[in-house]
Length: 118
Image (cartoon, rainbow, N blue to C red; front, side, top):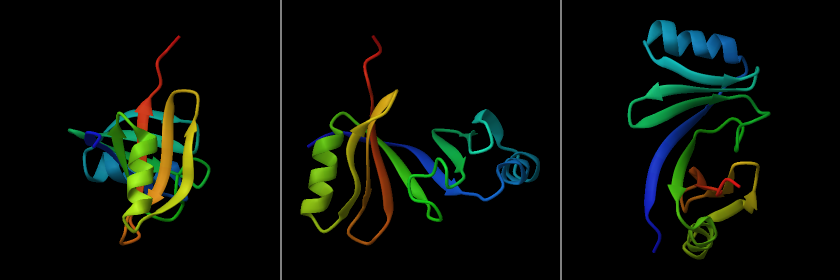
């Protein structure tokens, strides 16, 4: 069984600037970085609080939990074999291997593992 480390909570937003303002000005979170008008990461202590529009959200309109694991493929397979569903099969992007799944109760999870840099 792979080790799992919850690293990120991804919230949906239709207005990134408004959401950043709410979380920084109202609640005091610190902005770690933003990517244009569609994604921002806030310092949530041991967990990053991410804000994403439909362009970058793995499951637009839902909350998704980002879980770092050494074996994305095994995590996705185990989820499916135990009552969950794969929304996006394991794939590689520029920086990490990812899979987007629902757990057995319909909660959104994103398994990811950083890819080695060449």
